[in-house]
Image (cartoon, rainbow, N blue to C red):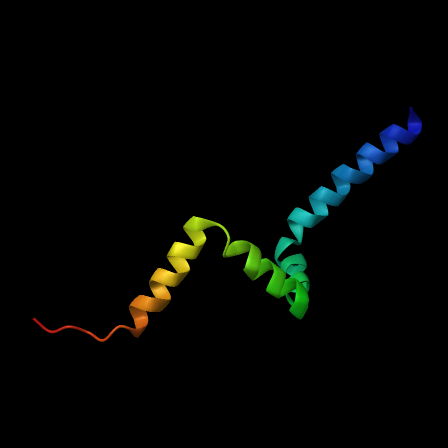
Length: 67
């Protein structure tokens, strides 16, 4: 019983600190090249993100039409 309580409290404190320092954790995570490549590959499999990113990239390279 005591060991389970300690495990739960450890999980709660870990989640609290992960939330509190989420940007620092994210920067550390994405600072590693392989993890960054995996994160981008995973994100590009999500249709909403892929359409948004590719739409903005392709739209920026298109020449402006004058009417």
